[in-house]
Length: 113
Image (tube, rainbow, N blue to C red; front, side, top):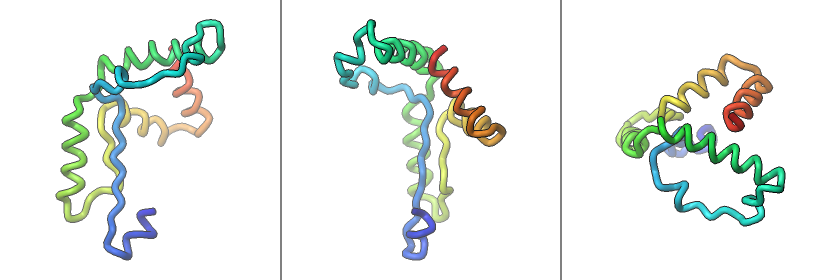
């Protein structure tokens, strides 16, 4: 989209946060069926919740995202991409050094540990 809109003076910016300390998790509405411990999906949801809980302990503060947005807005020549948080920086670094399959497997393992 950035290539399409830039000739019209419109800059597209991606702000890509990792895990951020917010109350997002408490505000989520989770379908009852997905919480059924007897379903395969319910078991997966429990694994992902445990993984997310561990990751949120080391999450970046929300102010870091606000700073990235502000930097992009006030910049005369903003970057296309703003990575926010050490976790997402590490993921992108890994992604750039792995095949798609290797990265996929790493992320699946991360979400199930």
